[in-house]
Length: 284
Image 1 (cartoon, helix red, strand yellow):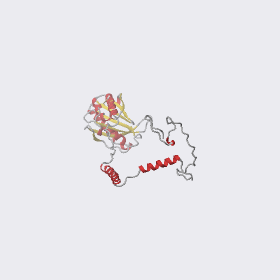
Image 2 (tube, helix red, strand yellow):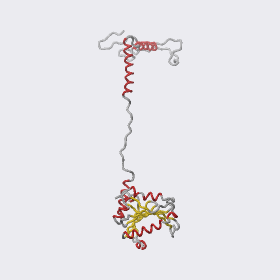
Image 3 (cartoon, rainbow, N blue to C red):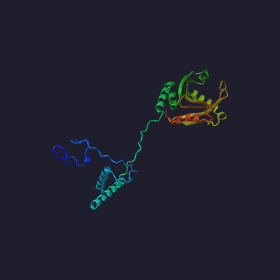
Image 4 (cartoon, rainbow, N blue to C red):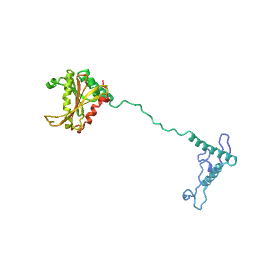
């Protein structure tokens, strides 16, 4: 064993435990050790005893094994009680305080799709109609129709008492908004459309008899379904189905027309368009 020095650490006496770079010592010559066959799965099966490194590993393993021994007596009972209490406490916590559940979020209601477009469309169409009365009369459809323009009044239409005729479209349907000189001219027009309605079912099966219809605005309308056949031109011979209606208290009226074949030979699409008057208030 080396002599102690007041400012140096005490080095171990065994040459095997001295680092090769210890101050004041020459590097130790490491002894030549026998090369052993690699063990199978970490278990030595050869006849040779363990070398010095293996003896230290085994000794270290023994010492660490002694440190990991379980306590006995009262200490063992206390440890068992502690582990049992922790298990019971975790189970009670899970039972009494269940894990949080995901709550779906709700979105705020939004305006119906197309509402802004329909409102703007109604504003543009209203400006096209010539009088406030006919604009209010067309109000339920102002957000649906488009391409409105004022037609020139023909001589025949003028003779029938018409003063203005505004044409608009709604897809396959063409609509007309008509103003008359007075109530007498409007009533004369109603009589002509009633006469056409008399044989409408022969041209367009399912035509309803003339009647009165109430609108969402609280008006009672004279309602007539009629049909006619195109006399000349490229569409000669084709059937047109139409709905004419008017306000009995004012010299105004409206007409929806469509080729019968475009309606798939059914009144349902044309009636559905007109039914906006019963569900939609006047749009401004």
